[in-house]
Image 1: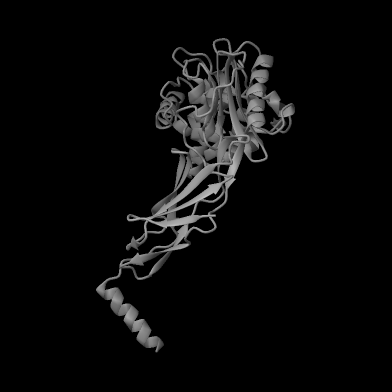
Image 2: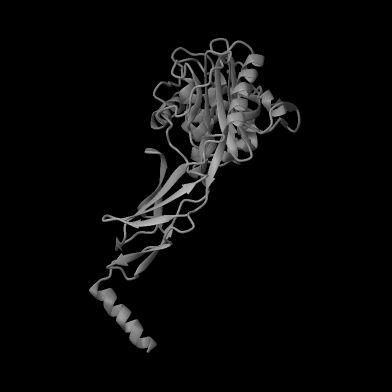
Length: 388
C-alpha cells in the first residue's frame, strides 16, 4: 500500500509495486549485452515504447542504408499530412527525374498521375524508388530540397551520424547512417505516425487497376508472428538491410540489421534479435496509484481544490522476473498557488530501482484555476447574493 509522509517541502507517496513506469535511458544500455552475434556489419535491438537498447553491434559505424532511407521520406510525408499541407487523396505527378530512378520501382512514366496514397503504398510495399522520388518532389519541391529537409529532421532527432543525399536510398557518396540512428528514426516513425502500419503490413496489392502487382519486400510478414514493418533495403554498396518492427501482447521491439551478406541472413538476424526480445523481456505495467491524492488545495484561486491527472497506461521494459521490487514515488507539494493552467505540471511520478531513477513522468492539473482578484471576488459575492 501507499505510505504517505508529509515533508517540509512537499509530500512523497511511496509504494512497492510489481509493476513500473517507462524508462527513457535511450542513450545507454541499461541491460547486459547478450553474448550472441548476428551475421551483419551493424545491428541494434530496442524497445519501441521506451527506446531502451537491448542489443548493439557496431551501432555507430557509418554505413549505407539503402531503402531504409525511405523511412525518413515517409516521415516527412506524414508530417506534412498531419500539418494539413497535403492529403492522401492529392494527385502526385511524375517527373522525368522520378522516371529515371533505377532499382526497385513501379515503372512510373513522365506525366503519369497517382494519388499520394497510392504512392505511399508503392513505397511501403514494393520499395519503389521512382515513387519515393516523386513524393519527395511533391512534398519538398525537388529532391535536393527534400534531402535538405531530411537532414534537418535527422538533426532534430539527434541522428548525428546520418547524412541523406537522396530520398530513395540508391548508393551515393556520403549517403550514410548508423544502426543507432536508424533505430531512432524507425521508433520516431512508428510512435508518431502509427498509421504507417496500415501500409507496411500489406503483403500483396496492386496499382493501375490491377495491372501492376505489388508484393512486400519484407518477407517476415509471412514468417514472423506479430511483424508490423518496417522497411527493407538492398544495394551493392549497402548490402542487405532491414529495420523490422514486431508486437506481441503489447510488447514491441525494433530490430535493425545493416550490411548483411544475403536476404536470408538479413531476415535470420532480425528474427534472432526479435526472438531474443520477446523471450527475455516484458512490459511491467503500472496502474494509476489508488491511494495517491486525487486533488490538492489551491491558495489564492477562485477554486479551493484542483483535480490531479496521473499518467495512465505506462510501463517499463524489464527482464522477465526482475520487476518485483520496483519503487514508485509520487512527488507533490502540499499546496498549489493560483493561477493554474489546464495541463500544467505540478509534480512527478518517479520510478526507482534502489537509488537509480528509471523514469520520471509529469503529474498535471485537469482544469484551469485563475487567481482570485478584487473583481472576481465581487463577482463571486454577487452570484452568492443572487442565489440567496
